[in-house]
Image (tube, rainbow, N blue to C red):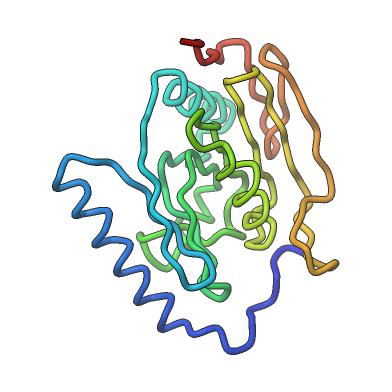
Length: 203
């Protein structure tokens, strides 16, 4: 099962209204010199302060570069929104990998339709690891994201989650494989050499 069916009675107009608020919140924060991400879950907006770091950005760029080096038709988008309007879900992803064909059929530029994504990658932030390990690990299979990769520079591990399944009523991935920095990791048909990935430095 690729995604949970559209929930009966889910007010799409409410979702679109909340999307407008998300854009307004992010634009106002940007105007004030702050970087935030805003997500939508259960008809609520959650705002996350962004504190980018060199290792975080380097890993995101390295994965996108390696995927495109293996297949020039791959579209790699950093800090992009991913959504499932029928479920009223909007998330911000560190990196999305998808085919050019999937990119071209997107109905709008606001966000990428989750089941069209080949892989979503999140690099764990030291300040908010629960967003990647709990919230997104619940919402991404529900949204139909086929491959979800969690890269954790705190301990140098990578978890690759595949096979989204909502048949039990609890969204989950059927398979999870773990790797360490230095391994070659399969991600959505590509292989990523994680040797260059930096670790976070302890204070």
